[in-house]
Length: 71
Image (cartoon, rainbow, N blue to C red; front, top):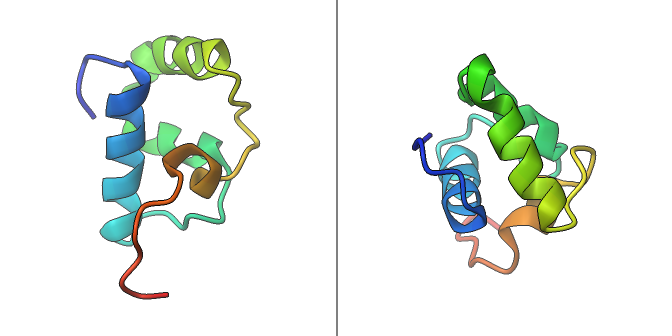
C-alpha cells in the first residue's frame, strides 16, 4: 500500500487486493491491515474512521460499486 493514506488510495488498494484474491470483498475491512506496515495502521484507521467506516464493515462497503467480472 502507498504511504499516502487518503480514502481513495485505501479503496484502490483494497480493490486491488480483492482482484488478486488476497482478500474477499465479504471480509471485514480489518483484513487489509495484513498488507499495511504495523507502524502505519493508525494512519489508515484514522482516515477510515474520519470517513465513517468501521473496521468490522465489509470490504465491499469500502470499495463500493466497482464492476466485478467474476460475479
